[in-house]
Image 1 (cartoon, rainbow, N blue to C red):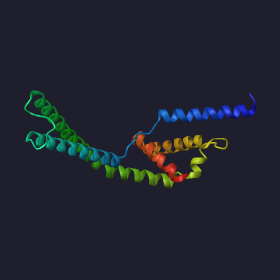
Image 2 (image 1 turned 90 degrees about the horizontal axis):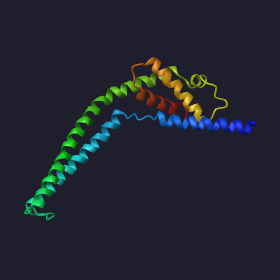
Image 3 (image 1 turned 30 degrees about the horizontal axis):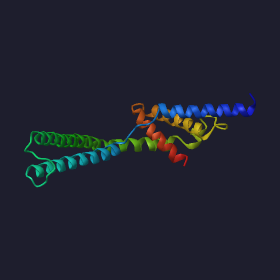
Image 4 (image 1 turned 30 degrees about the vertical axis):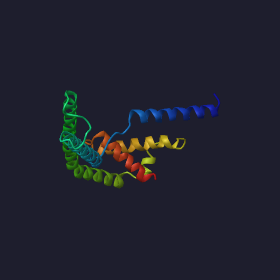
Length: 181
């Protein structure tokens, strides 16, 4: 294999490694603030749909709207099934609201932890220190990213071993973005 082919082969292997890393270690971490917003909007949607559906069924029963007749057995069945569906929407809305409340209570402590770790990183892990932890002269930018990420993650885990892996990865990604804009 000549030098050009060998260099291309190495580059292809690095690209494959990057793809495999992305597929196997995707960061699915969602902040408590994002969870709160998602759950709150879902809760409101379920409540609105549930109440609106029950109002429509009630208006149909009192003969203001005419979607189906409740004078037949099939009409009564439709009314029962739809009522159960919209009541289920209300129950799901309540459960989702409780989940949003739980996420809201965690926002402050999570933000405090993130700020503490970020401050520690700024004080103890400089761009030069990160880049000196690996030999990156012949590396692609993608591979440098992974080595930088691994260096930051290892430093955070050493200083804060109790932190969740997803939180550590999220903080490391933010720090890389901050340093290497």
